[in-house]
Picture (cartoon, rainbow, N blue to C red):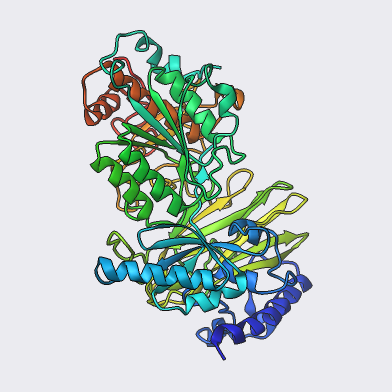
Amino acid sequence: MPKRSLTFRIIVPVLFLLSVALAATAPSGDSVDFQQIGLDRSSLVNYPLLLKTSHPTIDSPLLDFRFPPTGLFSNPSAARATDASGGDFVRIVIETTAAGGTASRAAALSAVRFRTVSLGGRVETTFGPLIQALLPPDALETLAAFPFVVRLRRPYLPRPAVVLSEGVAQSGADLWTSLSGYRTIGRRVKIAVLDLGFKGYRGLLGTELPAAVVVRSFRADRDIEAGIVHGAACAEIIRDMAPDAELYLVNFSTDVEHHEAVNYLVGEKVDIVCSALGWPNTGPGNGSGPICDDVKKCAAAGILWVNAAGDDAEKHWEAAFADTNGDSFHDFAADDEILQWWVPADTWTGAALNWDDWGTWDGAAFGKPTQDYDLLLWRRNGTIWELLQYCNDFQNGLAGQKPVEETSLWKTNIGTYYGVSFLKFNASRNVKLELFVQGASGPVEYAVAAGSLAIPADAAEAVAVGATDWSTDTIQSYSSRGPTADGRIKPDLSAPAGVSTATYGARSFAGTSASAPHVAGALGLLLSKTLFTPTQVRKILESRALDLGATGKDNLYGFGRLKLTK
């Protein structure tokens, strides 16, 4: 019998007993104590084996779909987190082998596509060795065992970092807009807003947006609006900053669709791409990985990439694993093994963990991780912690595995605390752990602002933009900051947030999502009014920035707040 089937029958009663034991006594110092359920701490190597329920080549949250909607793992957000369609399918990305020449790769892709369809699935799109598909949950393990399949995973999903913008006058852009341009005749500067959705953009045409824009959706359903207004607000700010530019509104929903969208923009020869999104757990934070490669592809084509730094300075934690009491759980402080945060009622929350066992990115894959750590998600009920989800992917040296664990998204109808703990399952060293939390109201416990930069703002080629208060020039407390994992200073610039747009209203567009389009628009404005190259224009903005932090470039403001005038 496969290990995964046996261990799942064990995990439910074990976790049930754990919950009962924890419920029997109020938690002391938020510690996780497996002795309460009769497990011998002297056999630490053995007892975690009772808990491993995952599949070596399948993301563990996907396995929730194999079982009836009852028990500890029955949460509606599992479907939401994995983009299930109609309750009968789950959206997955199939990572296929890239070995061999072009002909063999094409044959492998064709075989996997055929097998997916034969199992009742539907292929939505492909990019390189990646296949995005809808698949019946019961077929996951069968497909995972098929030759040429390296891994089945959830699609990587980005997170938005969240009338005339006040940043136009503050940056001095209004002094440039009336100047005659070099590129407005014959070929206008092309600026692309690469986002999740542009709800309401049609009502802004001819007023807040140009009368005509180029629109393209790479979503599987080709819905350019997608019920999301975020992209429309970003486009408004760019229009304010660079009114002569030609705007491209391009949306997607997954990493595979993102790769396709970037290829399209390179083919369109756009000048600037503005992305106010971040991609947790898609790389080590050193500028490498699949999303950072999209930035590098644009840079190689002479395209400037402007990216929001992220809004995670208060929702981020990182440190080396430490276990002072020998129970294999990380100690955040003395007698505290659970990091917690407050979640308001009806708010989705979740957590993403990664650690420094990525290896080297070769343009197609990272190394094969061997340090196995797990993530447990808890919810506080009165004075006790209830175990909601055990995220336990394998990291045992197989291709396609990554040093990451992610929870599904959860929410309750009342405000309460959620928390996470980290288990050293099978590792030979104490790794450096990094956590990002979604949905917290206020800072998470033990928050660490340094190193909270979003991917792909960590790419050297990206112009990473932090957020300042438009009226006071102070850095926003949520604004993500460097250094990168390889020690580089980021962001590169900072720009106003908390500004006005027709989409969000007066002074209601906050986050580095509002800051990034100010810089993208400023770059477009200078490109249209001068004969400088994109690289030169970037250097001009960095040299003219208002230095607000430590002298020179720093990890809060970068070179300083956006300023087009000397």
